[in-house]
Image 1 (cartoon, rainbow, N blue to C red):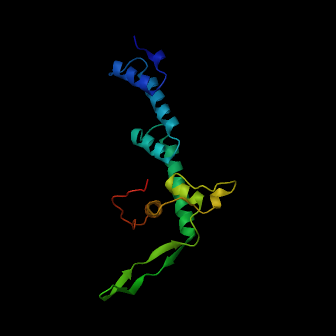
Image 2: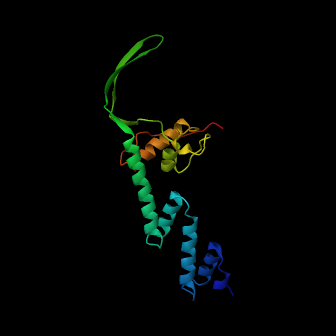
Image 3: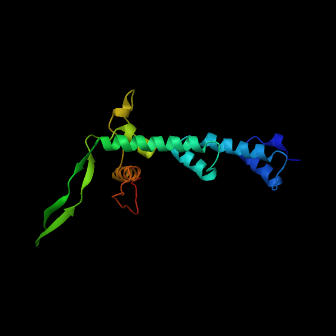
Length: 178
């Protein structure tokens, strides 16, 4: 007989719940065990968000929401503090081809740009990872490096969303060089 003593991980908890679908003697303990297991695996923001999807009113929901919101507020405040507004406008563009010259007006909307290079700690706070090669004791203040143009675009779009702005870039069919 499959009993509560055999519940040692999430998989065995699932077996227990399959055996007693309408509730066994230890169903509440098994459900708690499963929730604790999911909570232990929530080691980053993505894991916490997965936990919140599965247990929106769970034991750790408020804690995880606070962590995620605190991180987003920190990112928003620190990012905007180091940004400057650039006024948009029209610019004349001239393209010279072999057989002809083409002139046209291009409108550039207002935008924000960073005063400084994006640091490794800022990049990691937004993206959740940091692939930079030059790490050291104070690497969080070093500029982020080892990012592709696509990584930079994804960073900008994600930072825009966190800051309550509309993402600017639309990228389709990304292919990385191997």
